[in-house]
Length: 292
Image 1 (cartoon, one colour):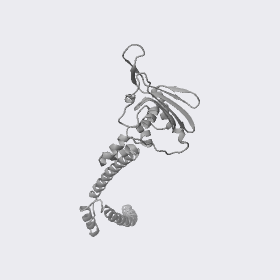
Image 2 (tube, rainbow, N blue to C red; image 1 turned 30 degrees about the vertical axis):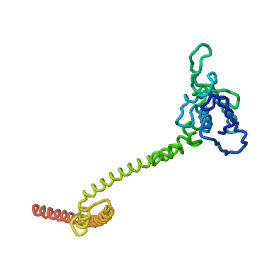
Image 3 (cartoon, rainbow, N blue to C red; image 1 turned 135 degrees about the vertical axis):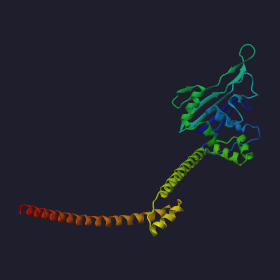
Image 4 (cartoon, one colour; image 1 turned 180 degrees about the horizontal axis):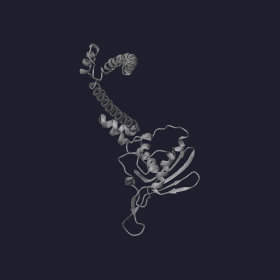
């Protein structure tokens, strides 16, 4: 967004109609706004911010206090802004809510806040909120973000100078829009807490399983039992290694015993067969004796 021309009327310190033609600076992208205190430098930023978003540039002014105290009774308070965005020209006319003398009779009447936005194609959008919403859609940023990336109001800069470290950090976060990084930091801390909680739960589970290990008799089993009595998460790996070695030895022993069992089963089957044959022979001899 590049402001081209600003017109203010009865706005802040400017009692009458005042024009600021920024196009006279040409295509230069950087220029200095300077002047004595109270000359109206901040008012230029107030006018731009008000025209775009209906808010002043700083936090010390509100939209309903922008009418000039020096204005004539019948002077209208408004801001006109012509700006370029993506090489297209837009025109905004916006006025705040203020009180003015009645056209007939005595007393005052309230002039309601209103705004008009003329698009590059000639179409017109009216309505205070409608124009603000369209500007946010066009620029892709809202009023708060516009303040943070486009300007630092004098009051907030003074607040920054006088603030303590914690408050200054909050101001810098607001000015430079670092809330995203703070959110990332918070999410990382939450993940760290969740990971630590899960890790502690797994450690307790591991130690519980270790305490339930039954060690065999013998030298190696005694060494493992001693390690289990002093078990901690840091020596769990050593205990697991010793346990795996015992399991491997038990597996070898089981295989050996299984082979021995198979051999004994084979011998037992042979003995049973011989016994059965002997019984058959004895039975035959007994039959022979009876027959004789």
